[in-house]
Image (cartoon, rainbow, N blue to C red; front, side, top):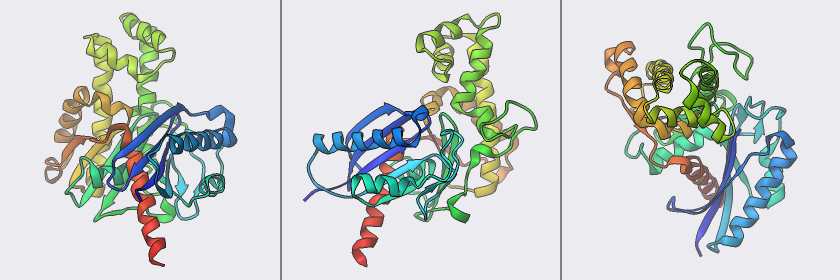
Length: 322
């Protein structure tokens, strides 16, 4: 019988769910906007509904477990979401147990970036490398490191909360309450916020128009305007690349990976950002770190789902051995 895992990728903007097979192939994917304002109960109901729909769509097979990637900080060992800034009000939520109770299968919970790192290491851009650093740039910024096939967890699974690495002494206040965080300066949310401010200034009309069409002040409008040759948008994208380059330079010195893989929603603009990121790394990194490849994630939006399923399969195999 075909074995499959249910996989969830919980973000501050979207909630995705998939049915993933043993070989990493994704049989079905569903996406809905995360019901953030409804709190834990609303999001849990969304997950249950998505799972029921996926199982009805098939293919039919044995579900061996559930993998759940979620924003940190969280504790993978206890299945506890501690206090993720992108999900206000989620204080010490035992999400793994709550979802297991609803769906009747064991749940493997880990940081969404760790899940994506595992997916890219096993099936994507990190294939064949021993040490893979994954950076997701979307609503926030997260990081995951797979070293010799294992996720680097740190104390209580709290390692690589890179979005809250300070890269400036000034700037907008982060959702965590601090100032100068990588996430507050270089996330997709930050780029959208900078775009909203620019739209109100001379020369920002196109960004304002595109954000109005989107229905919200997001990074997509800034990227779209940059692709149309808008000078203001291109300057914002250049600034985004500079912040990303500074953060990546710090991470190269800290972890010395074989390769850096960039995913998340803003990776769709990797072609616009790559040159600026590389330029900063060449200027700021020590010479021994300058040749590390910086690549776009190959699995795209599915990286976290595939990685979550891989972890669910691994834990199912461990249970079978005991």
